[in-house]
Length: 226
Image (cartoon, rainbow, N blue to C red; front, side):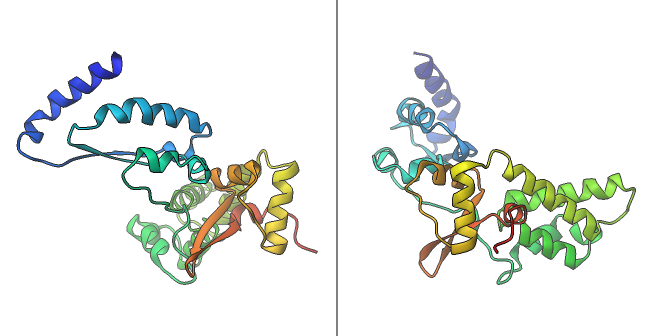
C-alpha cells in the first residue's frame, strides 16, 4: 500500500510533463556495491515494478554480484542489461584520467609526475582517482605545503592500499597472490566475486575479453613475487 501511495504521488508530480509527451528518466546510482543482492531483488520486484506503464524510464546501477548470478534475474526484470567494468581507461594508453584531474584544478597543486602516479595507482577507477587526489592534498595540507609532492602521493596510495587490504585473509589472500604471480583468476568462487565487488580485484575489457588484475594500490601492499 505504501509503495502504491508513493507511486501515485510521483505520477501526480510527473503529470504536467507526461501530458506533454516529455521523456522522464530516473537515474539510480550506488546500488552496484550492495553486498546482499536479495535486497536489490526486493527493490526491483516491488518499487521498480510499480513504475511499469508510467512512461518513466529507470536506469539503475545493479549489484555486481547479480551479473554472475545464473538465475538470469537481471535479464528477466530489465529491458536492457549492460555490464560496465569499474576500470575503464589505461593511463599508459590514454590521458583521460589526467585530464579529469586537470579539469579539477590539479595543475595548480601538483606536477605532471604526481598526476601520472595518481592515475596509475587509481587502478583506472574514477572514484579512486578522486580519492587519491583528495588524500594527497590532505597530506600536503598537514605538512603545511602549498603543493602536493611525491611523498604526499605515496602516503595517499599507501592509505588506499591499506583500506583495500582490510579483511583480506585466507582464501581471498590466496586468490590475490595467485592473480599477481600467475595471472589466474576465476569468478566461480563466491570469495572471488566479493573481491570484484569491493574493487580489490578489477575487471578490464581487452581485445574483446575479460582481463582481471589486482588493484595496483592493493598490489603494492602484497609481498613481492619470489
